[in-house]
Image (cartoon, rainbow, N blue to C red; front, side, top):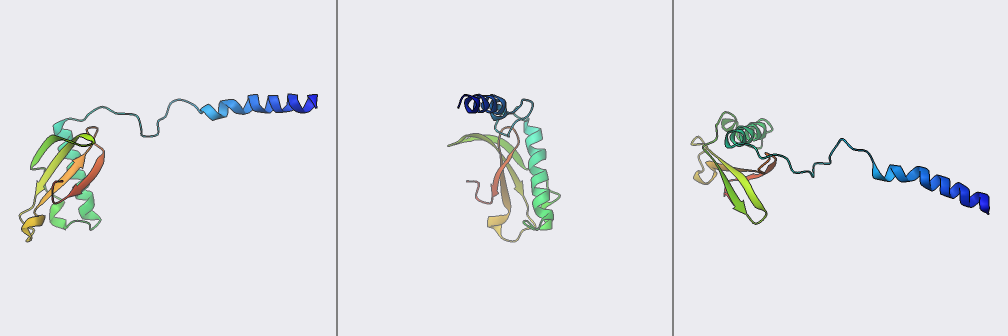
Length: 115
């Protein structure tokens, strides 16, 4: 019984460091630095270009630059709201695209309503 207890104690002591993992990486949860207004416009334009390439938006959206870039505060906190205007779209309700980014530049969503 004493040998079994010693074996279990050794096994436990060797496995404990595995539970803590190592340093030097994050899991995307760490807050990062806010990006500038210019960088927010550029990142949003890249997202719009990619959506256009994937067929989620018409091709005419791919070359547009941001019309406005502003910070707005919503229930979950402040975000970048970047708008794109595309007069080539026939449906007036679909001519303005709103892209929402976190302050650090992560894509949060996009829609035509601005909400």
